[in-house]
Image 1 (cartoon, rainbow, N blue to C red):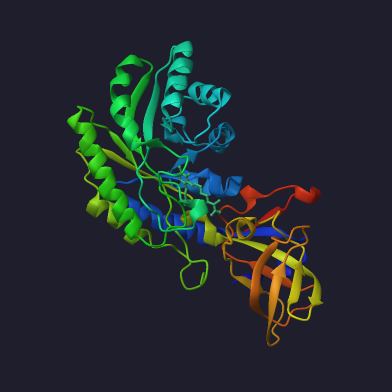
Image 2 (cartoon, protein in one colour; image 1 turned 180 degrees about the horizontal axis):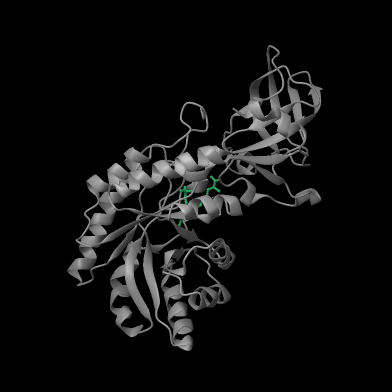
Length: 381
Ligand code: LLP
């Protein structure tokens, strides 16, 4: 598919991100339709990709926004998301960020610690406002994903631990400016073993029951995001299995009458529609390894260096027989390597390669290290 656009690409300074908007629209439509079957509410996680044209497509489908910083809340508002569709999570919300969110009248703070609740109470009281909050609970459920993107285990910094809840519940009556409207969970990202979500449902049911025994019934449950995508064979599975994912929650989550179930999906909505296109600068033939040296590096796509993440790489230009290469970037770090011992058609200086499935946690994690130029983005419409 990308090869069809080689003419456009050859006019474009490299490296650049290219977003396939038709695929994005299709993905969002499928997610929307599957969620609608059960009246589930999706908040798009801006942290995955906050580019304006992407947010516009998300907004058009009526999704809400999931933010983890004051600037993400600002970006969501600028993009046109209604304040009452915005949730705000994050383990380290600053006073300025909380104040901004209070002034913006967002829907809900997903609060990650007892001390944070105290601070939101104090800041809301100073403004004479009531803040809606959900407790982000660390459910101690394994997401069976890479350890760096697991969030729901006791050893992770996220959320309020279950053993803290007993003491926390009576304190709510001392916090007149907080309205406790829900429970929030997020166990990790790039989850492909859907049993993790089944385990999450079981845990949410137990916790909901526990709170009810204390007389607390919540109008909202937020089960986070985390649905993974197929990085290995993106052309076979360009759209994540939203049907199976939502069906699990419909089947297992013990929803109370009138309760609204919220999701915070990022990666599964945007990853497959983004690609990083880079030009081959040099070939270097060593005794053990042949290197392809690209003009994109870990500064443009950090995931391989940071999490040993796999992204499929294609040579868009060459039709020659395959050779084996280490595909690396220009940054002065040995971890600046996209893929080791990888087969590509014999590659030459000037060839264009596409690093696939880079629409989520790609551009948003760009760094200026080595004083790199800011990577550009183009959109296939
Ligand atoms: N909700 C919360 C509270 C989160 O922390 C995250 C992701 C999401 C929702 C969205 O999760 P998703 O549906 O995208 O899996 N940079 C890493 C991923 C970090 C995910 C952080 N939190 C990567 O490139 O793999």
